[in-house]
Length: 43
Picture 1 (cartoon, rainbow, N blue to C red):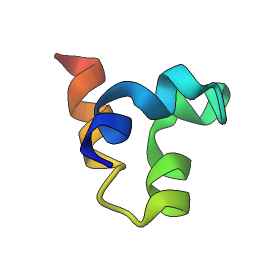
Picture 2: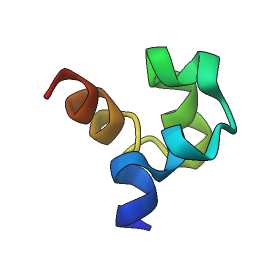
Picture 3: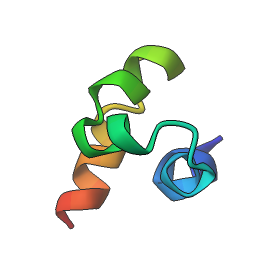
């Protein structure tokens, strides 16, 4: 799951629009994912 959270979610293309925000992704996944994509994007 970590691999998917690190960037798989964004690559999957499930929610490209939400990916920009990162909030929806976390909500759907569980809430922890929200922080991983946000940090990864900023990095």
